[in-house]
Image (tube, rainbow, N blue to C red; front, side, top):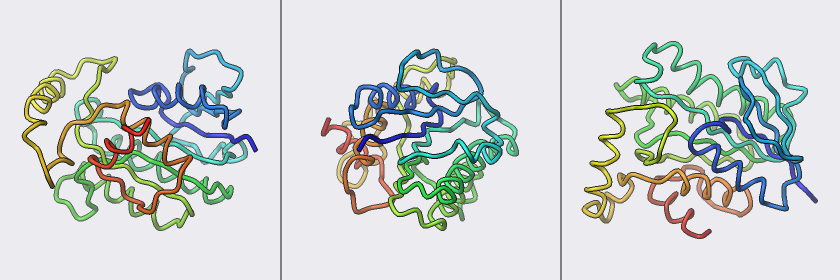
Length: 220
């Protein structure tokens, strides 16, 4: 039986790569995109919903699928206001998970971040941790939360500090071995492939750390 996927964040670095994987996968015959602007893609599988993604709950009737992929995320540099940041990195994934639960969607896969901890004194780590807890509390049968390290890839907008960090991490990646592997920077292709892999295969863990994301992504 063909499947329907919902993809949030299709215009982003990882989401755009995941969209390409889904479009080329014969197991999926419909990809629903929920976003604030058109994706720019023209494909018979794509069903676009141009909405205010901060109010996903207003579109619950359309939020039906077999799997939800949530690639939504911002940064401190792009969204310095903490309330706005929380509405994106906490509000959108949690609302999406609530709708998935409400509409009996059995698979929910979301990108979080390395260091996510709801008890962290660091605001951004704490928000990611709170998001993870809310999603897990919903009890969606097949839930996977990816915790990537710094994502190394070309973005549409310039982030000078992040770019410098990416180059630095690439230089020291070979030095991070053993338990430190999860701190290596990771390519968005690895994350996209891992999300796709998890949707199609059984995997026993809910939390997927960065080094495991890399390994699973290398399978494809």
